[in-house]
Image (cartoon, rainbow, N blue to C red; front, side, top):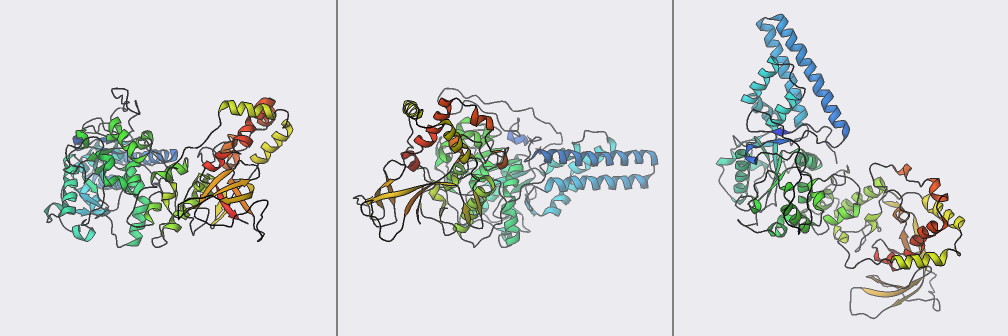
Length: 598
């Protein structure tokens, strides 16, 4: 999924004065019951009431180079303006002045295209109520008072600060995005094309659209975007491009409005968590991506009557959203795409639904920062399989293999459905410090330091997981199963077996698969062997996280000094966590346990 190549300064205001707000301060709630005592309000939160419609986000970027690229381009443009203005003063005749005005207009147009490069293709003009394509948006700007003022000030004062044009353009083209749950009668592109939205005969979907445009217009913004009517749903190329760009559009928006159609007026805290909006797959990136967000109730009044300019700065609302989604409130406020904590992100959408089956996977592409084609019709198992394959291939993070459920036809090591990543219904076991110390003492004379060091190096040198062309290459620890006897139970769909394996404590495995009981005294006549396979994780040795974007896979080896400088007790302690702690029921508290026939 493509990320924007350039993130420009975004500052939107209903007036002509550009006023950059000071950095936001932290919010300190009263009382001691809140989960979060304070967090930094995200950059871009307007300091004035939203009716003033001023948003500044001069520091936002996906990559440090984007800001450098932006400054370099703007500096070049300003040098051109200085040269044009100097020529105009020296020439002094009207024809030359007209030529220079035309050149400055061309430079402004370049800045406009840079600004619109990360904006939706079609936008609703909140003043006229018309749906405008890219050229219509530019034409509207060129006939506005803001454009004439910019042109005049640039000609008169070429020594203005470098970002003057970019800020003025961003101020005018600031876009407000809508996040909502689709109703049965939503207006589509052909319903609003060439028509004034405010004059259309009201239906349930149109009332929502009209109300949204009025809210945006009254807040001082010129442009609004709704996924129902601003995308040609019948144009596959446009639809795919829009879906791959949508995270960037929400990210760069001046404001995102969340409409809770099933939350009645004057609702109390908790209504947001119960809204159907909170069950949909696409709403996850729609509330993670924006920096400024406001929640509105059924009658278009602000949720909890909270008139702060950015609800991401509201401790009460963010704590409620955290409870409803299971996403840490700090991630809700300042989310950054990436591979870190892969399984946790998969869990975020494990209970959500989408109208189109493949969309549950597609909605996660930008959350992981993954660029993959959107291929409607491939079925949900292939869509999810491609995503999971890319996560493992790019990051080496094997937590995506930690699941419970039906295996995928894409690859049997992957789940068939996103619901397999729901939280486990049990607590993972762990060893106490006293047990660890006792095990360390028992191994001090039994395990030589040289042997432990050699084992450590062997594990450290294991190759990283690789996943390509639906084939998984994964370092594993294998335990031959010696006994597998069925246990009595009433469940007709699943079977529970008491299992013994070399090097492991006895355990119970519940599965939908049925196999012939066997033991050391009564081995299988077929010659088949059962193996318990545990994917090897570098976390057991406290090695660097391969999913960390700041560290390459090649830099994940342990320094040699770490292998030789440890006192014997420390080396033993390290390996008791690996060999004893991991060789107990803890192994099977993890969903990544695989049962294979060989």
